[in-house]
Amino acid sequence: MQEKADRKTAPVSAAATWDILKPFIAAEARIGARMAASPLSASLYEFLRFGMKQAWACLFGGIMVGLIVATWLLYPANAPLHRYDFLFLAALLVQVALLAFKLETFEEAKIIFVYHVVGTVMEVFKTSVGSWIYPEEAFFRIGGVPLFTGFMYACIGSYIARAWRLFHFEFTDHPPLWALGLLSLAIYINFYSHHYIPDVRLELFAVSFALFFKTRIYFINWRSKRWMPLLLGLALVAVFIWFAENIGTFTRTWMYPNQKSGWALVSFGKLGSWFLLMLISYTLVAFIKRDDMRAPAITRR
Image 1 (cartoon, rainbow, N blue to C red):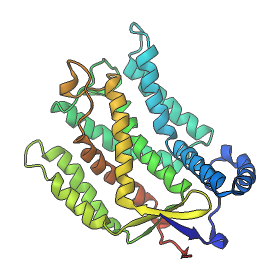
Image 2: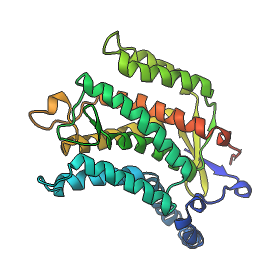
Image 3: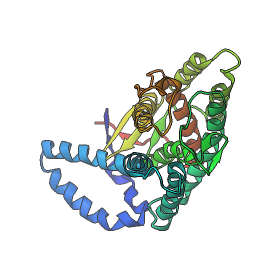
């Protein structure tokens, strides 16, 4: 899905946001000019560029998943510091390092903090009712929830904020933020209330579809402005979160009740839960970036 971007109003490279990337802007432009020589090399370059941008957007999430896998494989069973506590302290250190080396903006750190709180509160409740468990010991915990878990939720908000900046998001037919706020509040309440009263997630899916049915998200990966339905974009991110959750359960970092006797694939039904959680994350970032939300100026050819 492609529209031609107006070259005269092309945005400044998002790499300028992070000081460590600024020296590579001119070099990347020269490489891109050479790769544009043929349609085949241009398509390959755009594909690779998209992957690199996505990897940069996933920086915090990728580090956290890497830490989970590394500690599962290598962390000593008899270490004086519990694995979960190591993950918590490592996540804090990573957060400080990302800010110190300007690999993360303070805006992204603010989103991470808010979503850390939101995620931790939900974790405390969900573990108390037996939705899932953390099988190992931890000193830094609230109830049965080790504190590193809030960072796992924060990874989602971090990804959206970084991708928003990297791809210069623009929108058409975007729902009003007040409506998204009410929807997100209803979704968050339902994560708790469905344990006691009927689950209304189907109704929440229907409202989400109605709000976002016409919404297009426009983004610039290289030279062309492209678009997709925003609902599709959020659903694709939910799929990748589901893959990451399978890594988390495979490493026994957390477990669902049906995984106590041995690992099993996380239910596909969890995709719906992650989609709804994605809407909360998206709404939080949209409120923070509300001054940057705009409709695209497009030259059709």
